[in-house]
Image 1: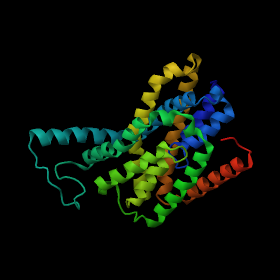
Image 2: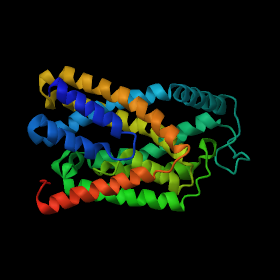
Image 3: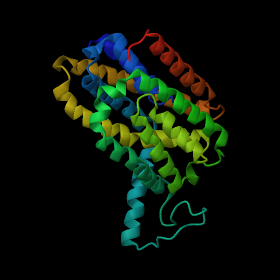
Image 4: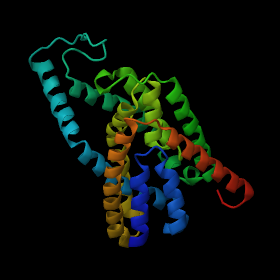
Length: 294
């Protein structure tokens, strides 16, 4: 990988990781266009995962205050529960969280619970995820369209009333299982989790914000796991281009988080739905006509 390829991949990763249009789909095209590693699926997967660490840094930086509040409250609340013997009964907030735990501490539990499904499935199917099947354009195009349609249904069916302070176990479970869809190429992690959030009755901004917070364990685990293997898989001269790519992805990703949260306060996800269905349809037609190879 050279620096030109690294910058392109970083821009694509930063633009598509948080906007619900599938980073994997666009990175597969970018890797084919730039010709990195001659289509070696293991090397491409490792590269994608390492570059994701740049977008992880963007989330950590953007939500630094939230993460600090969640972490400190989580520790304090459980310390008080154990040593101050607070009673573990439910509060009057419609039973969404126990009375002894703060809103921030409760978010910590929701992030943990919501991360379990993708962690379990990701480990069980690790070899398949890293293989050629997850780079197949037939799969990518179908998932682009399928999740786009699901997102459209969620826009219509979801009540869109819940704010961050009203999230409960059901939200973590629903969004957590929807995040598993992100293991399928073309689904989009943010697209899947925002869809799940809307189905659970969250507002668009809340669905996006919870999606970003939930991305932290998933991206960190994937990136760090692949980073360990990337040392042996990737060429030695790719280190500095990879660092450059991750930095570019981080800067672009930070701007995209800001954009999407601001956009969803006043707008629906319709533009992303249309883009997903259009792109997926174009890819299917090109595959059918032989203009693209799977």
